[in-house]
Length: 254
Length: 250
Image: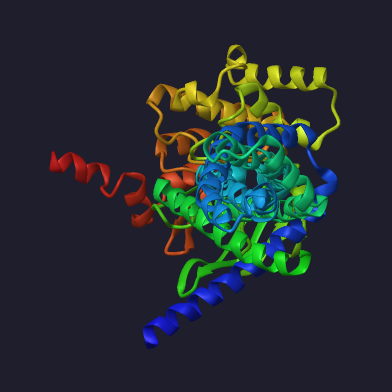
């Protein structure tokens, strides 16, 4: 019992420590924001946005399809199949779109960021930046932070469309719902705020992913093993923070 | 003038540098020798402000940089260049972009002027035909030379070399040694070199310093260092044996 409590205590302390460290990096990033390197940021945006489309499409498409498959029978049992489009749209807009996009981006882009910056750290490239009087936060963190904050909401919106579309395909082709029933239900139940709040949440998730990925990369220990461990830590911590942040933002926004 | 005044570096109870004092004069080449892990590279990191000492002062042209904020340190670093042990080239950039990096980030020079400087510096190290190559396609010696070209791109007054000849064959070592000498002779730069390579050390240095147990055992001009009676220094120079002992053994 004591061991379990100790582990919970250590985990809680680790979370608070990470919050503190990220807050410091966040302030440093904001301070360097006016010196943003546009070209570098656009490259990061392209890398993050365009390159993530296939995996986001695949994840959200199948999530939408399987969710429809699971709930359409239950709704039909209660004669509520006409609400399916609205249920899917709200679920995708408010929760599944932002969360799944956040997790996918943390796994794909966050890991790549940590590995890249971690390799730069262990091969003294970050020291070389400092020797040339270039602030590593301005050069490495700011473009990635801005790219994530801007692109993750758009990816989440794209995921919302794909997920709802996947639901539409299963509902009309598999469950026998008409096009009108599904689309009308979306129009009836979904408000703009459902999607916009989801995008706002994604903006926070994007910031969290970038800050954690860059922090872990810049603090990677020497050697390939150190970079590997930093990459794993980056993905795990990002996902934990996304879930916690999602809960807190859901309380505030809805 | 670089002055290390009563500098101590410790990690917990482990003391790396123990109240060391060292003056490096303008325009001279000083080589720091010492066993692996003795704190030689730490001295370079202290001079360029990558690391702060636990105690003591580091004076660059009379100013104590240990109390400087990062922004003030950046101003000091604008007058320094560093050649890293493993070159530390940005592997996503070409050779030309590596050399141009500092100029693009920290100056307002036109692109034509930057290209001219890049060509000039690469020409100086004999790599003007490799501008478009990526670091991964270069040999160890070429990487070191690009690293040197990058370090001198901003025309620094001080160049710090961390193991500049490590891992190179004797011919490439001599190329690097000649480049270090030419930096001093043609541009009057102050050079601080950390190395294990005794041939290189005696070829390029005005003075040498041996770091042992966290302190300088001997800091002396080249000839004095070479001919010192200090047995520990002689042991280090000759790799643990005196020449006559080595001959007797064989």
